[in-house]
Length: 446
Image (cartoon, rainbow, N blue to C red; front, top):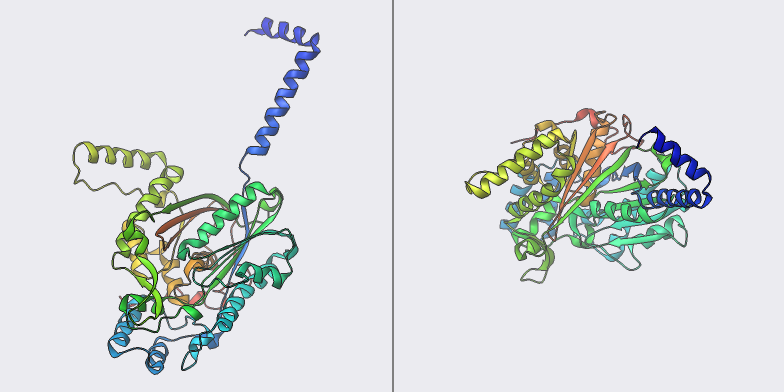
């Protein structure tokens, strides 16, 4: 069209009111549909990690002596636990629940409820204090705990404690393992797409009191040595005005479920041993299955976050492997080009070692994971938040930095969450690292 055509169109429109109204209506309608259907940004306002009181600490020698005095473990099992602890990467200041400090231990429903309340309410009290958010303004609540699911639910316990409003959308996720924290974030994100201008709280924890194993099957003794008390509470918002006070923006969530494969399904499995004692069994194939789940997960995540040069290299290698040389090793994309920080689930030393090797990371990239495992042990789905708190406490989080949280869990699942820092992030009050960050990183025994 030239200038003459535009002039003729203007003259036509001037004398055609119907056309003007119709065009305007289409423009308004299209703009409204765009505004209503576009994804709403989700902001992380703040989060809090629970730190247990000092009297619940379980130094390694005390742990072993206590295990011996209970009389539940034979000499072979005690020696196995000692070797696991020596190689675990756990330090001397991790915590076990109060019921496990008695001889004999006193696991009960009441003790398990008490542990859950201490962890969840401790994290939430600190979160509400730091953010000055009224609990009654919370519109969405998601709680995840894999092995302890009483009636009323854990989410109902929180509703009752803080007198949350009657129309709150509350969810309680159980049996989903150590990766359930990312699943809970994904659920909260989806709910925030539907419900406008509200807050969502995600509480992630695990309960040890009723899930300690008192038998002698080696594959079921490993969780005793690794899992420790911990939990986190995260405050999310979809209000545009909260971008100014938020710490992070949620960029991507990618979930991978390998449950269709029998080996993957049973590699982390709660069952009874031959003596009828209940525990969680870890398969010898766990690391191989985790590696396969990670490969599937990053195949989806890679195109979303990697620069185009890395994507082309990966694709070219894949084509050559399929057409010419099937024995050729696949190209491992350099995720250090996409992320500034890595929060790898502190499931154990072997998990961190494997991901450091497979993703070709540097020691500084896995420092937060190793130090979290050393200081707090495997706190299950909340471990990735202790790691993020470590990075903040070291004052390494700069505006625009991207963080990759990677979690593995029973089922078998591998889940990723990607966050972008909205500002230079400082640690919040009562951070779990507040009085000990200067002592880290510590040198770990090989």
